[in-house]
Image (tube, rainbow, N blue to C red; front, side, top):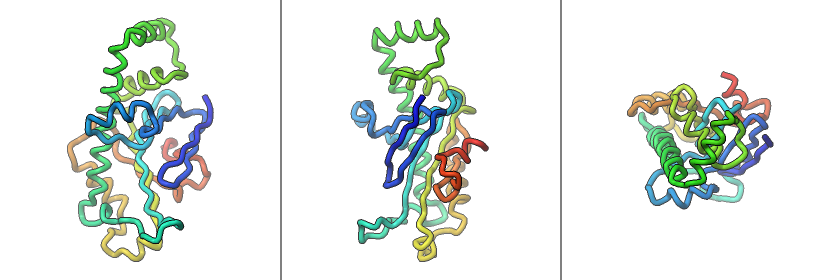
Length: 207
């Protein structure tokens, strides 16, 4: 295992040695799957080979290089559109995992390689197909799947927008849960502001 670093929505993310992570829109399958009309989350990650994390990043901080303030419209109202968008992305991501594995299953080399891997009972995730096979295995048990919304908010913008509920996180979680039930755990919401140790997701994973 190795430390992996990514940039998403002007935020630097570092995943430690316990993680294997793929950034969806940088992956070779992104172009293949774009024709299906499905929207995947920003990161798909395996933690300690035991948990599957589906991570979407939203950054509403005002950018120093842009004179335009962030669009907060998807955070407003009694049923913020972000909750529906997050729900759809988690559902789509689970479908994408199945599509990728169906694609791999049609490859002659994959069937042979998977047979050999299962025969040796190897748990290593060194190759790309190792990752997608393990993601599929974990996704088949709802208890192993953890949806994460990484929500970065600009305190000043929040103060200036009285249309945004002060209990935004609770509202988003409630609206997400009210929708058609997904076969995975309740939506967890975190941010750099909640991450005092500087270790990405460590606080969330520890729960």
